[in-house]
Image (tube, rainbow, N blue to C red; front, side, top):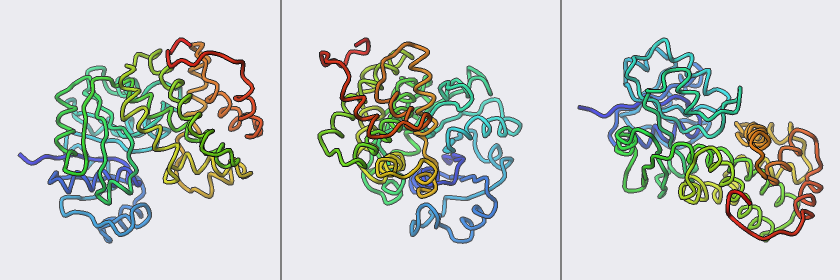
Length: 337
């Protein structure tokens, strides 16, 4: 029986994963919400806007009709921005069979209430719906270019995680599986906030020492929140936590880092968003992460200062100074300290 997967979201990451699956011999259907964009994908057999010069394999088909999804496969991979995650699920529900399996490569929280995305799947569909997340240190352009990459696939249903691993694993794309859905979700969401902070510091010209400190203490913040919500420390120290954090804080392919760089160099939030022209997940994640930290009484100073820069117009230079002027304390990675 042919392997099949339907991928929703024809941006850079959804397209890259669709290309990867198709290269691996999986029959793949890529859905996009913009009919004109999908028509261009069909005609050009490549995504000129997001991944120019990367040809689509013959196993990759495209559509702008959600009704095509259910007929094609019972395995879905959602790659839309976090603010569109719940609306996409709700739009899909009318077309999908009861035995559908839902995975996502979206990194963020539910925009409505800050809950984790697996909780959104359970609410819109069922707590019994097989659910999985694909996450880790991976830029779409490098995956599409067939450069070596390693990611984590997490699910409470390990047969589903293994099914996805079989679809995506290749000689250049290493898949690891994990039962820690929460840890992988938290790592993927919060690292975007910290990438904005690292970008701000670099934009201010504060150098490599500051960046290294932000990454290290940022990992502590990820671990504090992740463990509070039920994630495992070893997950947060792995590809989907530390690995993704390092990637997005240090490389200018990261939209979140570039956004922070622009703020540090004096651009307004609106100017920076317009210049990048794509979704910057860390902006909404900063608000949701800050609210979660307040809810659970978790000390997350980098997240707090980033939130204040984005939502309270705090001067970025003052935000960094606020972090440096905190009281002297012992260093610890323990989530309670």
